[in-house]
Each structure stands twice: as C-alpha cells, then as structure tokens.
Image 1 (spheres, rainbow, N blue to C red):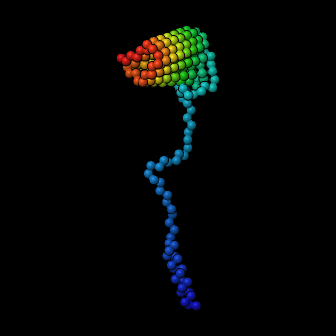
Image 2 (image 1 turned 45 degrees about the vertical axis):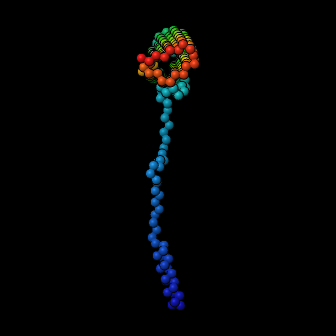
Image 3 (image 1 turned 30 degrees about the horizontal axis):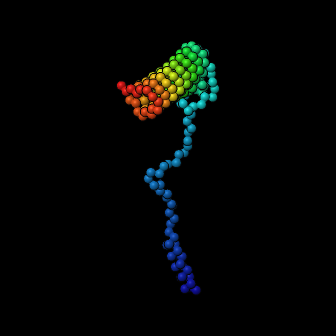
Length: 206
C-alpha cells in the first residue's frame, strides 16, 4: 500500500512539470501586410465632374444664372448668357448664342451653329454643329463632328475630329490627336501622338 502511494505521488509530480504555466498566444503580422480598413466613405462627384449625372434640367433664358449641382442647363435660344459655375452639364442647341461661363464645366455639348463659348476648365467638349468657337483653360477631351469649328485652350489632353476645316489650338500641349477628316489644323507648343487618317491636315508646333 505504501509503495502504491509513493508511485502515485511521483506520477503527479512528473505531469505537473511537463504541463507548466500557461502562456498566451501572440499572433505576429508579417511586415508589409495591409491593415484592414475600419470604414469606407463614399465620395460624391464634384460639380465639375464629367461623370456626374444631373437629376434635373433647366431651360435657360438670356441673362445671368448660377449653376446648381445636379442640374443640366440647356441653351436653346439666341442671346447672351452668363453662367456662374462650376457647372456639371451645359448643352447648347441654339444658333448664335454667346455663353460666358465663370468656373469649371464637367460636360459642354454644342449642337447648334455660330455659337461662342468662353469658360474655365472643361472636362469634356462635344461639338456636332458648325462654325462654333469655344475658348477654355484646361480641357481633358474634345470631340468634333462638325465643320469649321474652333477650340482654343491652355492645354488639351485628347482630341478626336471627324470633320473638315476645324481649328484646334492647345496652347502648351495637345496630348493625343485622332483625326479622320480633311484640312483641319492643330497647333500647340507640343503635340504628342498623331493618328491621321485624313488628308491635308496640318500639325504645327511653335
């Protein structure tokens, strides 16, 4: 009996020594692993963002107006217009309208004839009329599908022309020109890529 008690005590001592005190487990994250974001904030398009979709339209009358976010402004009558921007979308379907926009424009569309537009920075210009004149500061993209139009800007990133006898002055730089028309003129201090499938088109660097 004494021998059995001594053996039991020895067994308890051995198990206690093997187990030892518990140690908390620490997870180590390798260097360079991204930290999970705790939250995400959805950003709404700015008033001058070309990707913004206006929720309402307003027919403008000649005179002064102030652009409101979420609104497309339509010019369908001849006359003098003054818009205080930034403006998301301005669409001109009139003939012989003079539109002066103070501030940036997300999208400018000109479908009429003999209109004059003066604006700040413009994200996208689309001209499908004839004999129109647009002046701006920085322009992201220009698409012309008419004749004898003129665009004058401080710089233009991309130009696409399907028409004849249009004139585009990109100021400091025109990044990419794609033209499928005749007798068009492109001028800037620097002109990048030129894709010319027309004839008699002129590229001038100064």
